Image (cartoon, rainbow, N blue to C red; front, side, top):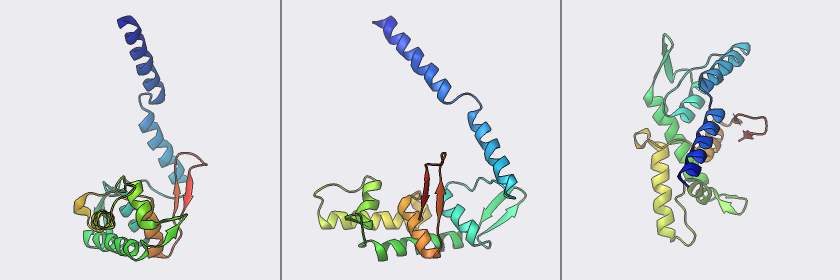
Length: 171
């Protein structure tokens, strides 16, 4: 049994190596940079709030300054943008999408909604979620609903592209 477990462990390790060969991430970054360059674009690491910052820098060039190849953010603009997204979500939280409200879907996606939870508990979780959206200090990342809200705030279509052609979402 010990030999069998060792063999299984070795097969798993070999599978991991095949799935993430050494240098795969740098190769992906290189490919991304080459594709961007063909379009006249540059690739930058925008930091931890990537969804909000990426959208904001494309629509508000006063939200950041470049220092060499480093971006310095105007966090007053970032906080204002996040607050607008939270307000849009608050305003549209009771809208129905596919038999559920925006509020319940956003909470489900975050794992904060449970079948049979009280109205007060749902409202508490919703307010906590909205505080996280509005204030970067809570460290809450963006999600599908904050992208939808950004689209509503900016009155622009937002297209999210993943790693494959089948992984394109339009908001």
